[in-house]
Length: 440
Image (cartoon, rainbow, N blue to C red; front, side, top):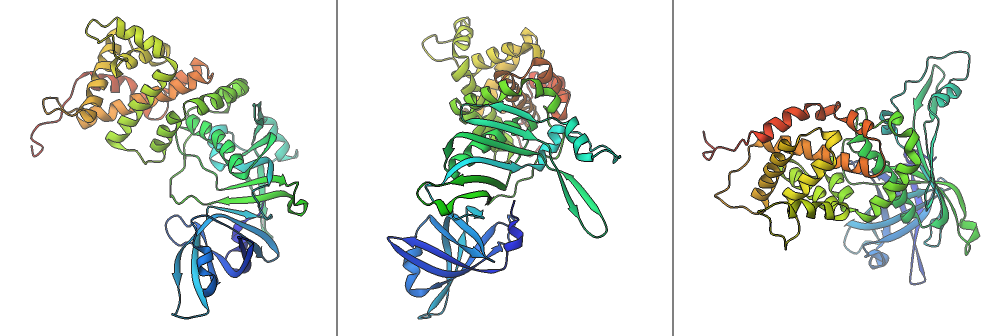
């Protein structure tokens, strides 16, 4: 794997081709210096060529210290220079930086892998104390790899020890590796989407944000054999500064190791057929959705799940409600009542609590989405507790749907913020409201 830091602040030769014309310029990869610290390109472009670069998506390529580079989906957003000068200084924002290959659209990706340090919280295994036996053999023996066959290819998740040595010391780090070997070649964009889908599965296990900013791929092209590559490194820029999970996962290695094949298969099917549930959850764990918006997002995710997978059951709840309009689709109260019943063994909510919770949460959601001044505004504490409950419900629905056993899901209630679930239910059912006079 190539380290992009080794090539920063070094002048390289770059090229851009369009409409049969090849343009050449000097450029330097540097860190942006803002809170994201993404890598950008500082370029020196001929003034006469400037219009050729006026596009929202450019694929540039070149060399730095004789190493091949491809800068994909780039665009220049800043130009500075003296009037009538021969050259213009420009800054390009980069999406993907390929190190070790000239990437072209006809490139066929056979496999992709990435190291994700956050997955150490999934394993929660300590490296054994050094002894006469090889430490890496003992470490891997305690953490056998997880594998799964999918319709797209083979998945591998494996812990790995990485060593760094100096004259004075040897440092070992645990860096889990996630790999995807494809049955049919993929484009780079498609390969990234596939491994990102796997990463999102582990975000659900973590109940937190997981990312990767570097990956390695192997690929070739039939039309230009000299562009074939082995182990090219792709550096991804994100544009966001998001804190990764730094606590034990809700579901760890021991929780899912025996069901990994089934879980991966069902996850990919779930992910492709109900994409908006992972999307809404992803906005929550990246802190793009907070407070009331988080509460509304979670309620919406449960409605989507109910509509996709439990619509008939929700209709049965509606039909048993004497006050319900039988000609309309089930409302949120009916969908929540069904979901709470479906998760009875996990949530451990009795019949009376189930009805009351569904009504209170539905009323609170409707207050924000169908505002009427005659309605009581729920208190901040109530909405916060509803958010905790619904967040766990979304996780439990997904866990159960993809084949995680009930005991493993039940154990999640004893971790993190979910250990106070009983208290949350009591507060929700107390029907607390905001005072009408906000100054008192």
